[in-house]
Length: 468
Image (cartoon, rainbow, N blue to C red; front, side, top):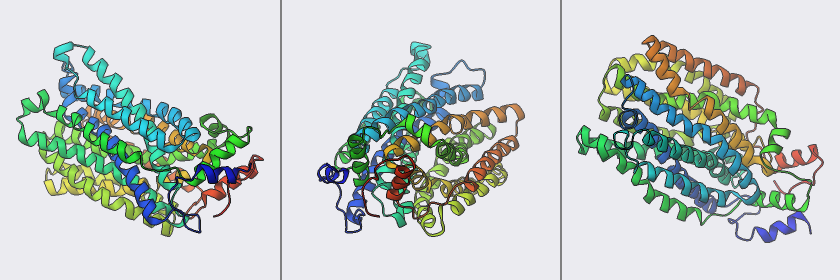
């Protein structure tokens, strides 16, 4: 039985396809919605921890730290545990996703991260159970990070593999736009609690409400994800693996066959990840510890910036379809290198408008890199190992980049009592990403089927499917 014939039977439940082999727009919108709602859930919970680490966890779980910054750094170290777990999750769920499918993997990840987040809201503080409190926090953070590690690859690939070649940048940028929505919701809930509760009640129990509310979003997200289908190109690749026993997939295969692709993905991710967490996490630390800026005002600034970020990301994705992935990404890396040098002086004015503007501009620079990542990375790997490839490149970088960025920045601030070393740190990160972009092959408009065909010719395999 041929691979194509087997796929015809296996793919009977797929989204409606037109004559050109592309998912019709109505079906594609449903897939985008399913990917987005799950991503909102995952990142609401993941970023909720980041904000709580800046505002609450240093006091609740690390009260014996020598200073306020010491407590915050200790909280960010537990925050980093989630990033360390993410590559492991990417490896495990990437393997599962390449073998069994994107849909079922995403259903598992959303339940795991939801359960871990809800339980965080139930944890007693250090004053109640001593060192068990931070120990349990670290354990739950690890589970949360492990699940998020498998989430991103599945969510973006579900859309990218259904998208038309000429508009893949636009459609696959929507799951990226769900990230600021999740962050927006987390910020909004915390902001509401700080408004309606006095500081002592917020520290005592108010912050927990945001973690408990995640259960509602998890149920909605899980339900929606049960009603999506796999992309036909994935079903074809899976059928090929079943038909040809010599065909391999997953993490070991992608490391062996596409090491340059993984390194390229890591280089693309490096500056983007660092810039983002400096903006959304370290900005809070800087204004709160250096200037004792009002927490509510800080959250409002982030709230407005997240709204703009959400609007900008799909437009940048569309731009990458028109002018190319490389020039857009390169602009983000170059502009990102300049951000801290004007943003921190704007913060030092303590002018609310300038603070909002600095954060918002930073996230717009970030969007120039972030929006195109799903399209670029999906076009770098063949379908049979795409989940593993993008997850590995994306999540491994998080250990050296996003997880360490708030810690390094806080330590630099503590050591030098100046924002200048932090600005230099960001500039170096952006220089690394510039090199990665320059060496990248332009993939705008690439056919994923042709990527599979090239892989098949290169490794002596039977071509997967036909068509575009």
